[in-house]
Image 1 (tube, one colour):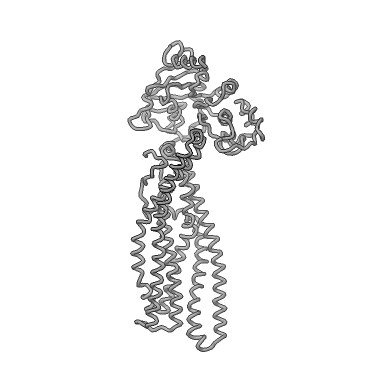
Image 2 (tube, one colour):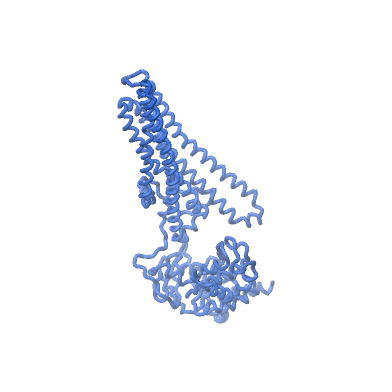
Length: 593
């Protein structure tokens, strides 16, 4: 997939087709019992409503001419009773349909969120996170009216039309045919509007996605924006995106609202036609009461037809959002468990790379024919220029990406043939950009092992020298931190990540610039904790600060797609090769400071 950004419209990978409404139906299927109950109440209320015009006919044609006041009182009482029962049914219908719709939306949100958890890094790398977020929240919320009212009301309205037609035919079949004369005009109107409306809402969904992506990016980068005084430029960018969204919205709404007045006008013309035919007695002979009752049934007929038209309108609008939702659900993870994948047993930590070649993009090889062996409990440092492939090695080991050729073995097991949870649960990964979740300090450390006790959490924090600064916080381990740990220093966030990793007790430990944000004094203390953290674990350490890797068992210098040098610190310095010059240049910089 081509890389995307906030000002690039997303292209649909697969056009929507009507069969996908069957998928939407699968979300409604578990609630079919509740749907039947609601429909029963709705149909019962609709049938009761059909007696109103008939009562009117009887009153005008029979009771009033005969001055039968008793009959008028009975008819009036029955009519009032149908209105009261209808009101009760309406209240039941509104509450339970809304509840049902929200349950369906809850299921859809859960499915798309669960699916996002399984997608590969490449999916998130190729699009702004704001465009992903809008699918989980805004697009699904847009379906609320469609699912809360539309689908069940659609079935109700079809029943209503059918029942009304039966009463109309029973009353006068010829007037019924006259009342249906303009239906072909209605169908022609729907066919003309539907394609234009769908395209307009596809464009609108793109512009809405672009705006959401830019807002998300702007909030995430607000410190950089203010540091470089970029506010005015950002205002202009947002002004342009906002204007595009407004224009596409107005265009979509103009097309959407062509249908409702069209249907309304057709219904008015049809009613006028019945008045004209009935009064002039053109091919029919009807009494005044029958004509008035028939007009009542005409309204009962066209109201659900208008509702069906509005539902179709909403359906075409929602289609643009359903396309994006189902497109996300159809996105296949690149890294998945194979059919014959086995659970990786408890490991010792032996690692073998055998002739591994990998590239993120075609014709841009990052690693070529890499081979090495690591014994259990050994520490490996990866050094070299930026972009040489150091992080790529640990990404492949964690199976965030699959190798192009060759294989990676852990304790003799090919990692492509084991389940992802059993592989990653035995690995601890610490990155330079440490993520702290909103919640308490205790909850953030416990993220590494949810069943851990408070005593175990405190012990882990003490080992990595995080306990002292935690106890200085207002509420200690119960201190609430904001999203991404914005109230903590970078060093404090990394210390918490160290405690979280230690608590998980992984057999393989990966540290990717994990000490880069810790000051020298804290790092000296942390080295004592790191010795405990690394003890008995196979570890890979990426660090530009070479003082942190001097004690590693082996140091791999990665450059030009290969491991150019391998050896411990003493051996590499004696060799006076690439590592030696890198170390000397860093040492000279320290002396200059």
